Image (tube, rainbow, N blue to C red; front, side, top):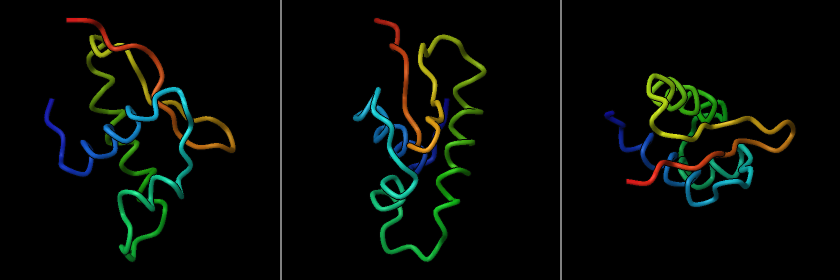
Amino acid sequence: MQLTDREFALLALLATHAGTPLSRGEIFDRLWAGDSRSENVVDVYIGYLRKKLKPSADFGFDIITVRQQGFCLEGTPPRP
């Protein structure tokens, strides 16, 4: 699977905080600080990652939306 630098940074951020929801604002501030885009860019990139992760069940985890809290990486990646 190929990820852009920004997609990889987003996945790494979610993995670092796996099991803990991160709000759009938190994600935006960490990955798009100083950018003039709106926080909706977070939703767009979450969508990109979900599409790339879905085709393969081998990953063992998913990005979920936690109502009124944000996004969270949930599950356990398989062991090598």
